[in-house]
Image (cartoon, rainbow, N blue to C red; front, side, top):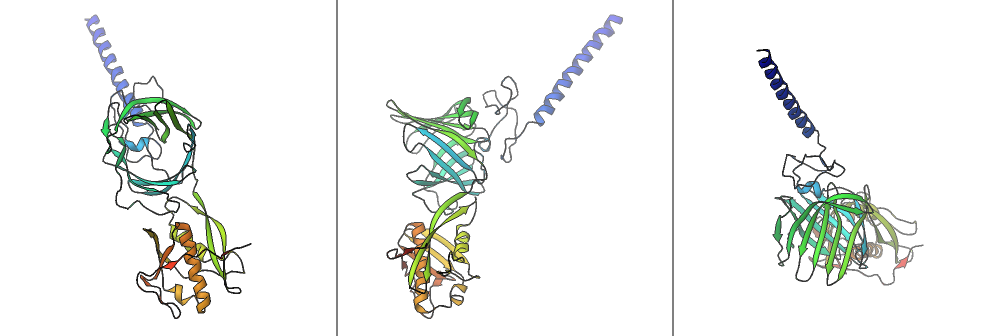
Length: 375
């Protein structure tokens, strides 16, 4: 009988220890750190092919189900610097222009041109939905109608997930938990392969970071772009020419001013600020203290700008000086957007004052000739 009770006691202890292990595992799982800057990440146990967290113990049995947000977080005021090899345009920088809900607008500058891409994370797909080349001006395109539909990532984030792009290229998750060394650090990443007729792309997305490396290879040639630095609190800085009137010599002067744009900053508000400031006593301000820019955008090859009624009531200028002010506004906006025409309205109506009467749809023309640099 004593032996029987001894066996029963051992079985109880074993069950207790097993229960303790299960409790400990539950606690450990509940304390897993969520990837930085991710949202609504409901992390659960998954198959062993899922990538493990960066800096986690490679020997741990614990795995986590990751979503696109974990590997492509939307972060404000970021500057990503990539160093390139194999091509002069393989080096580039990326800034975060806007974040609106499930969309992010990124600005890429490779030294030759600037391209803006709007990327959407929706329905288990990360997709470029809008793209604009030679976008040297800053404008919010996140609500524009889609002109593209290239899927960058697709859930589930496991090896073998594949999809076909609209041009026939095949893209798939070719590996997970790949070690990638970059000047910005070492990462565990997803490997995405894109196969074309005569080329192959490899893109690596790291946990909490996003894209960290790309390799393009074709016919013995290889071009790579590798993350050099991911810098926080780095707003976009643009050097912009502002034009101002001089009533004494009836000339228009220009000066370069550095504008700083944080993520989601409104472009019209920044221009409004500088329109109200004269850089020198020898030139005048472009608008009065209570004037607001109601809207500012590019449509085709025309810039559209709408002011509040104070533009006219606070101008207090003769016909000649009023013409210089309007020309200075036109030159500044036209030069920034790189177009020749600017449509100026007041409260939605064509510009009309005691000296100038514009018809509906009639634009002002950019005239940079004979402008003088302010010293």
